[in-house]
Length: 433
Figure 1: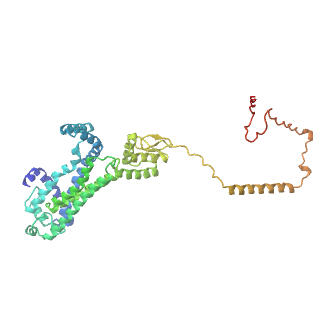
Figure 2: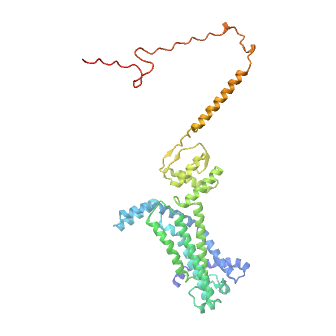
């Protein structure tokens, strides 16, 4: 441990200085010798470090998604050069270079906060041994040794003996109960974070060995935290539990607002976005515009969830634009699953419902009754001279003479006999004698 402490001694002084500054603030509220003052100082240190690491976290997300996109190509290279490991490595490096992807980018946040982790471990170990480190002088050292979190000293470990724990002013039972609960919470938060990533924010259309490795790590990491956690001081457990909770919340935010394309989280996000856009008939935030712009730019390469989103907008008379905005427009072509577009057909005119025989007979009977009533009314009405026409009969136009109906042509009959064809018949040929 001395070798590790010497390697990270350049950062021990800044870490101890940040803890002391936060302690001076919280000490005025909770008291300088309380576990709340020192514990919240460690929590604030974690939050400060994670805020500074947000750009690396964004880079990690992009690198992880790029690696997921390259998985099919990587699998082809592995199958093609499975007997030549050197050529396989060369092709992999060439693929990384062409796509601008670095596999180590996904580990940047963990690697970046490792120095702070070991520096804090060294500071807390100094408090346990009564050694001044960095800007922590004798008075601050005595205050830190008095600080307890739920009855457990900051520098106590799960593996410490009763004599060492009693020297710090605590009981062995309190230390082990507190450290055990914190180790379980630390492992559970790590497991939930990894499981959330695997079940919601992974492209389900890509099935590669990389996904199996990630699923295996989902169970391996919590076990590793549980094993190493029994050797961590309470202060370090506070640090690691806080950073795990921060990672879990940060990942939940990313999954909810910027999910991986093709994942279940993207399907849920686009469903929410469809309801929001159709209600307001526009995109309201920059994040929404960025998502719509990315979907429109893909064209035929859209996945099923993105095609469903575009088609849903089209059905309500909205159109997504290349700049990410949504405008009103006529019903455009609908994109099918294979990427082809089809124009929605004009709705056919609905045919009247066919009536039954009973309905037709009742309608005919009703019409006959109405006609009979009308004729009866006309017959009862008396005729007067006023009803006659004043015009002379000579002034009336002569009616056109009826044309006689044309007679059927000779050799034919008006009606064909049963079993004969209509029209002129061919004469029978004379029989040969």
